[in-house]
Amino acid sequence: MIEDLTDVKVCEECKVLNLTTSVGVQGCLRCSKPHCIHFASTIDPLYCGECLGDITLKKETVVKTYTHYNEDTDELTSYNRRAKSISISGNDWLFSQRKISSLNDAELELTCEYHRAYLILLLNEREARRTAYMHRYAGVKITLTPPSATTTSTEVKTTKEIKSTKAAQNAKSIVESMLASGQSTEQLMELLKQMKAKLGGVNAAI
Image 1: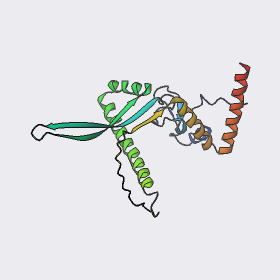
Image 2 (image 1 turned 180 degrees about the vertical axis):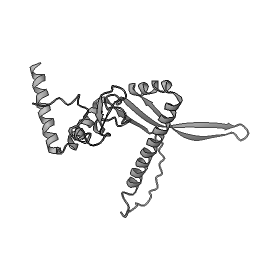
Image 3 (image 1 turned 135 degrees about the vertical axis):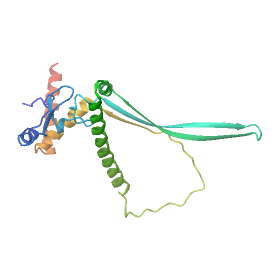
Image 4 (image 1 turned 90 degrees about the vertical axis):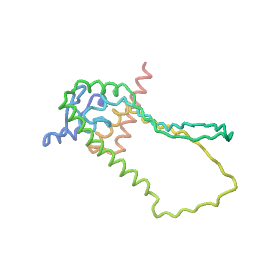
């Protein structure tokens, strides 16, 4: 029989850890249910993944063209300006914003400094990964082909969208908690096969 893991927010590994330390499990700020680090939201660990998972980040590179006509010289000149547009959307993002107006001055100061310190840690991790990525070909000899007679110019407007959903958060939390408990990748694959077979039998019965 396969245990339903959708409502479990504390893995066995962290249940044992919580017996010797007080940081293994904490209550979600939204639903108040206890959760461990494996079931914490990847966006803000103070919330569980189910309560803070519906957020979408969208990045766009916007190119604006300015055109100027000089009547004296009868010349038409144009130049481009590029800007980065960043927007955040999602129901959980709207929920988080509502809390701000209810904070008093001391709570607001504490929250700002907490997130400032957390942001510095996130930026340092991102910069370390960027540096490692840029040096991935260090020491590799690259042979350049001779230029051809044809010159091309391409203008690309890039759009990047990162979406987080509750289903993805729950699935990631379950996998991380099972790996933390010592289960192997092969065991996880076998469990997925059993769950798929079970769901197939239910659908056939319906």
